[in-house]
Image 1 (cartoon, rainbow, N blue to C red):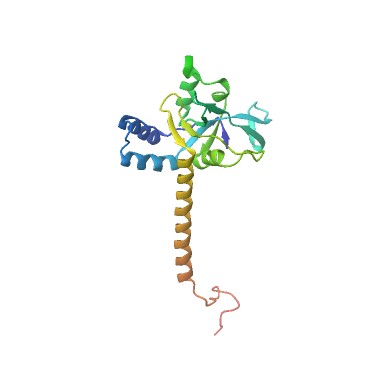
Image 2: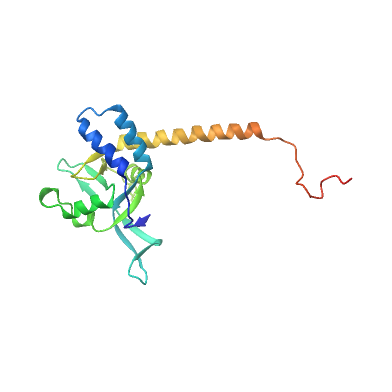
Length: 195
């Protein structure tokens, strides 16, 4: 995980805007495009980072670092893991006022994460072993405000695992078909017959 990295996802943001414009019934092509871009994207997750500070005053996260990711609680009590699509969106969040203003802990520092990281954060039990009650992930809260409930995150992860398993099995079968059980000596080795 990289701290305060520059991240940009123009294709994902574009697809999110298409989905928002679709209204209550998103176009299936837009949903498919969203899933593809979601997989490619790198996000910025707000984090409180405890790490050693280097000589330049920057936190060193490649060594021992502790991350605490704040959870956003909606007016209905549902809890969300927050992710931003890019630095410009983080900057907008920092400038918000009124009811949409995020607490300071959501805009102070960010860590670059993939969707698989976000899904793991909401799908695994809490460190103390208790049930994780996070409802889902909210991308760009109070802006595009795209919500991915935990059941959808789980379905996406399971689909990716299934696809990876199928690719592995296909490659494995091709390898098994192409293996010739004969040992062929390396040219110039002592195993070659000399004339």
